[in-house]
Length: 313
Image 1 (cartoon, rainbow, N blue to C red):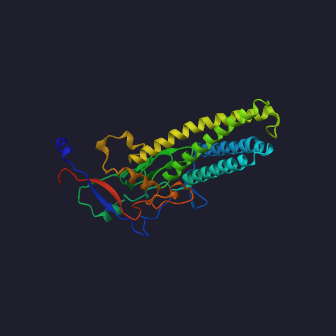
Image 2 (cartoon, one colour):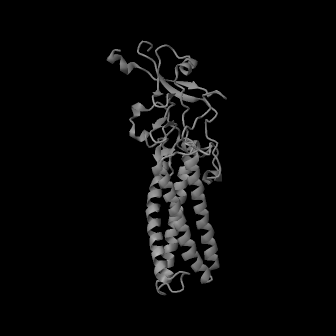
Image 3 (cartoon, rainbow, N blue to C red):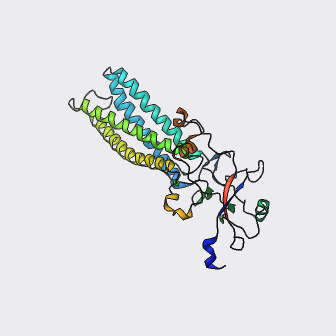
């Protein structure tokens, strides 16, 4: 092929509808399955990170309820104990549900073996047409899809692979990951405020009568809680802001590293990016990890970029 003809090649897009009850629509999770039903990435590093996250949340639950909430009940600050107890434990619950759904929701994997000779013939493309294909999944790669070496699958609108949720962050689970970072940042800030308040109340009393535990134990628990809260507040706050900016600009983490010439899709308008992640209709359910968003375009065919050869241009 003449190198001079390369800049003349124009990219076109074709829509390939996913046929119901065929290989196009039946997803094979492969080894990433739990109880023959749920998506679960069997990566040892990711599993350790998930367990570590749950242990840190369990420690925060223990320290807040045993040292701070129990102390408030002992000094007859019932309203303080009820309000902060319900708020903190509710945030922990929402963070756990968000984490579980981010980890066990299929992120938007592309069906394997869609780029076989038989499937290519079904597309009825013009002779000599070049189509994007993943050699590892043997699949036609939709626009904005990338291959994850840990999940061993191509993922639509892949942002990154996060070991803390042991999953890729993609089209189907980005909402839950954003909610997870938001609730962790919020409960961490709440824990910091309550810990500082507890120190102010008890420092003059040398922590005598401030907890069911002895003063040295209470001080150690609160110091670790304060350190954990500060660390996770900074980390998750940065991640939350980064994710919101990426959604607002309709640009994933991987796409931020690409040049404009490598992009073949039209960016959504600002608010449309939020709707594409959290659901069509703006409502309080955007903040709920229990609800599954009705994503824009789920009933539409996927788009694939193809390049006609220089002879066809």
